Image 1 (spheres, rainbow, N blue to C red):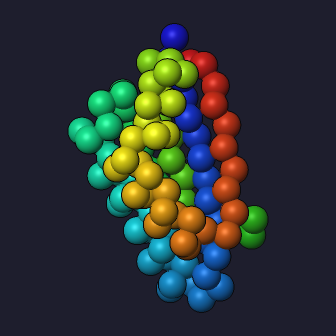
Image 2 (cartoon, one colour):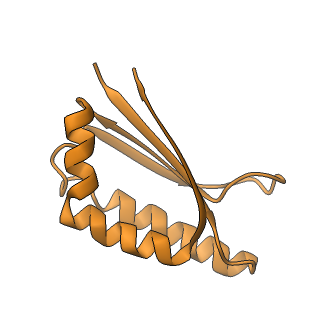
Length: 100
């Protein structure tokens, strides 16, 4: 079994340039966890590419062997640093975890 962790964020900034900068910062910081958090099996991030009403700003898709791997990721100090940044710029978060 693989556990897929999908999270999407809406940035708090109203200015489009600032929102884009924050979204890129979130994506880059998350991507930087590859090779640092050993329980990550695959990870991709993306900043919204289309200006469609209702779209959110940045998404994470990460795969783990199991719930224990996701738990290890969640509490890892490097991930906690990213969480601090994300919380400082995000205005909303949505997540789902499912087996693939």
